[in-house]
Structure formats: structure tokens, C-alpha cells
Image (tube, rainbow, N blue to C red; front, side, top):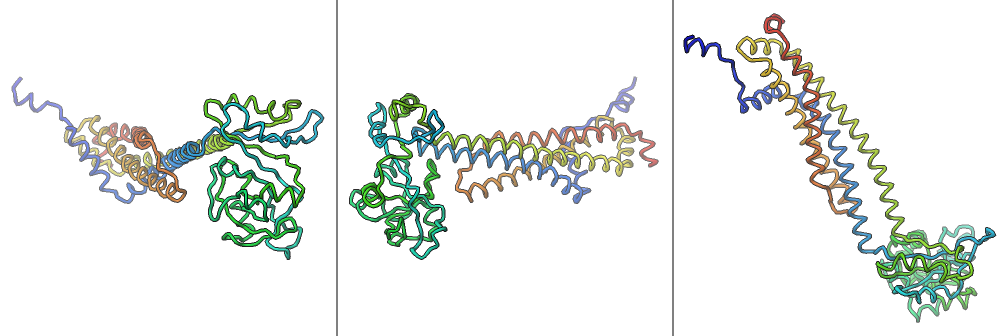
Amino acid sequence: MSRGHQAGTRRSRLLRSDVYRLGASGLRSRPTRVVLSALGIAIGIAAMIAVVGISTSSRAKLNDQLASLGTNLLTVRPGTSLTGQDATLPAESTGKVGLIRGVSIAGAVATLPDVKVYRSRLINPDKSGGIDVQVADLALLRLLDGTLRQGTWLTKATTRYPTVVLGGIAADRLGIVSPGSQIWLGGTQFTVIGILDALPLAPELDTSAFIGATFATARFGWNGKPTTVFERSADAEVETVRRLLPRTVNPEHPESVRVSRPSDALAAKNAADLTFTALLVGLGSVALLVGGIGVANTMVISVLERRREIGLRRALGATRGHIRTQFLAEALLLSALGGLAGTVIGFGVIAVFAGTNGWPISVPPAVFAGGIGVTMLIGAVAGLYPAIRASRTPPTAALNG
């Protein structure tokens, strides 16, 4: 066989460098359709990345918060007796808790249920605003890692006089914006000396007004019994102290004492957020699937519109494999464009949301890599059938069409 005859029967080859150019040229010929199809992919992947990124950033914020607040705070509250009646804590509970080995600091609050708070004596008695009056230990602010928005905390001197420190929400409800204002508390005019920031480990106290034990005993006849005791211990001693607290506070009826750890509530909230995140990721997956269907639809229409091009390329020597590769490359490029756009949009949403809420931006790189990988997989699946269909089109039928 002659060398010329061998050269004439040699099969054509599609270079790797040509695959990208073929795929890109097919997309450039239909820019509007390409943009709309890529947008479907972009919306789906942006939704998934944004949801995962917001969730991880929220968890990072929670971890930072727990690290700063500590997980070694325990609270002691009265439960119910064996007869079903509401129990109370003994007056010496705080002192007993402070004697437990490993406890570094203890303090308490006592709710005065019959004492109401009003902005002034002219307010309707039935409209107290749901503000609780709490008798607070001087160590309470340090125990809860609380901070003051304005003013000062209670001191030994101020506890002897009608002075009050307001929780953040309580101050807002009363319309108090600065210390020095007067409020009507328990039929007595009190001077506001401080306003607290939010207390993450004790949010129930944000709606409280705190007064000193000395004045509460003299003016309201407080019996010295606390309603909640707080204590902090060394991290390694938390579980040991937790077991000792009921019998220490009430040796006769330890079953009527409830012990809890506030940080567990924050962790439970995070677990609930993870469940909600999984739901949103599922919705994002549906959007991504719709985007993949859009890619498949675009490629099928492209095959129908370009039958003459397919026939001409086949007549010039392109194999079925070349045609499959060309259309599969177009589908992959289309999905990659959508994936890249969706990744950028998703990161933008995360950055805006985290910045608005004061969260750190914490997104594992695997999330972005996984997002691009998923879009490429969807592009491959969506483009496979149109590519096979295009490769099986007979050249003569394609040219006649």
C-alpha cells in the first residue's frame, strides 16, 4: 500500500487544545441562551453555598461566643417537691454553693413577684411592661460576664439606697436611655445608675430591674431566699460540681433542685440551626437540579439547530467521538460558567450577611471546591444525552435537514 494511500485513510484527530475552542465557539454563537442557562445553575449553587457559608459562619460566631463566655457556668433553680408543689431554695444556698470544692465564684438573684416597675407613678398599674424586679448579688455581673451599656453596677454603698440597674430590654421598654433617670418601682422612686448590655448566658434577665439586697430587705421585706443561684468552677470540675449541687443546696430534698448549664441552650440552638440549614440546602439542590435541566434543554435545542454543522463536520472527517466531545465540552463550559458565577454570588451573600450580623466569615474551601465539582458533574450528566444524540446523527440526514 502506498504511503499516500495510508495518509488518505488515516483517521482524523481532535487535539485537546481544540476541545476548548470548539466548546467556546458553540456558546458564543448563542450568548442570550447561554446566559439564561448559566443563570439557572448559578442560582442553585449560590443558594447552596450561601446557606452552608452562613451556617458555618454562625457556628464560628457561636464557638467564639462560648469560648469568651465559658462553658463552666451552672445555674441552680428550685423545681417541684414530691407532692407536686413549687419548691424554694434555702436562704443560705449561695454560701453553701461557694463552699463546694472547685467553685470559684457564686452569686444569686431573687425575683420579687409582687413588686412592679413603671416609667412613672402616672402609668396605669395594669401596664407594667413585663419587667421583673430582681434582688442581685454584687458578683452577678462578673459571674455572667456581663457588660454595661452605660453607668455602673451596684456597689455596697448603692445597695442601701433606692438605686436600680436595668437590663437592656427593660431599659428599652421603659424608654430609659441614660443613667440618672427616675423610675417608679414598688411604690418608690428609684434612680437608674446603670444599663446592661444583653446577657447571652442569661437572656431571661434582660427584662429585669436589679436592686440591692439591703434596700430590698428594708423596703420590701425580702426573706433572703434566692430564686436562681449561679456559679462558676474550673472546667475540669464542672461535671463533679454539677452532681454535688442538688445535695449541697437542699440535702433533705435534692430532687427538688434543678441544675442546668446555660451554654447547653446555646449549643441546642446551634443544633436546631443545623437542621434548618439542611432543609435550605435541600431547597438549593432542587434549584440546582432545575438549572441542570435547563442546561440539558439548551444542549438538546442546540443539537437540533446545528444539524447542518454536525453533518458538515462528519463529512469532513469528524468522528462520532469528536462530536460527542464537542457538545459535552459545551455543556461542561456552560455549567462551569454558572458554577463560577454562583460561587461568587454565594460568597457575596455570605460576606454581606456575616458583616451585617457581626459574624466572622468562616467557609471551608471544600465548600467552594465542592460547588464547582457539583456543577461540573451536573453539566456532564445534562450534556451526555445531547452529545450522544448529536454523534449518532447521520451526515447525510444532517445535511439534508
